Amino acid sequence: MLLEVKNLVVEVEGKRVLNGVNLAIREGETHVLLGPNGAGKSTLFLTILGFPKYKVVEGSIIFNGEDITDLTTTERVQKGLGVSFQNPPAIRGVSVRDLLKLESKQDPDEELNPRMKELAEKLKFSDEFLDRDVNRGFSGGEVKRSEILQLLAQEPLFTMFDEPDSGVDIENVELLAGQLNVLLDKDKKPGQRKRAGLLITHLGYILNFVKADKAHVLMHGMIACSGDPDEILEDIRKEGFNGCVGCAECNS
Image 1 (cartoon, helix red, strand yellow):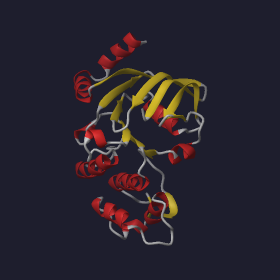
Image 2: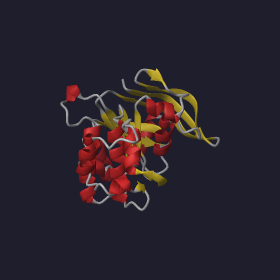
Image 3: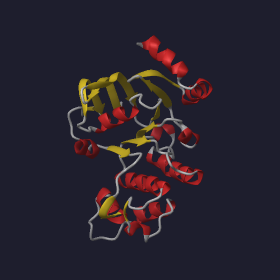
C-alpha cells in the first residue's frame, strides 16, 4: 500500500473536523475524493501534507510503509509526496525557470534541461514565460499548467490535486489532463504503474479526462461511501449528496 490513512481524527483550533477517516491507495491507483463544501476535504488534504494547524489527535498516516504522522511538510515532500494547490501563492523574485531547476535538482547556473523544455512546450509555455515570476499575474489556466509542470519536474510517488479543474476553461482542462495522466502513470499499462494520486473535487468534472480507479465521498468528517467513480458520480448528479447523507448515517 502506498498511502494509508488509519482512523484519522483531526482538530482545527480545538474543533473536531475529521472523525475517524480511513483511506488506502495502492501503487498505480488514482482515487477521487468527493464531498460538499465543509465536509472536510481540504482538512484531510492539508493533514496528509503535514500542515501544523491541523492537529492529529488519533490515528496515523502511513506513506510507502513509513509512519509520517509526525513528520514536517518538507520531510513528507522529500519522501515523495507532491501537491497541486487550488490557489497557490505568487512568488516575487523567483522565476518559473529557476523553480523548475530547483525541483528537478539541476545546477542553477546550467541551462534548463531538455526534458523540462520539452514539457514546457507541451504545456504551451514560451521560453519568455519561463522567466516570469511564479504565479505573478498568471491566468487561472497558467497557474494550473505551471503547477503541473512543477510536479513533472519533481516526479513524486504520490500526488494530491486540490480542485485541479477549478477556474480553468475546457481547452486548458484537456491540456492539463494529458500531463496529469502522465504524472499518474496512466500512459503505462496497469501492471507497470507505480505512481498514484488523489483528486479532490466538488463536482468531478476532471474525471471526464482522467480515469479514477475508486471514488470516496466525505461527509461530516468521515468517509460515507466508497466505490466505482462512475456509479457514485451518477448518484450524486441525480440526488446531490442526499444519498450520501443516508450512507453516512448508516455507517456512523
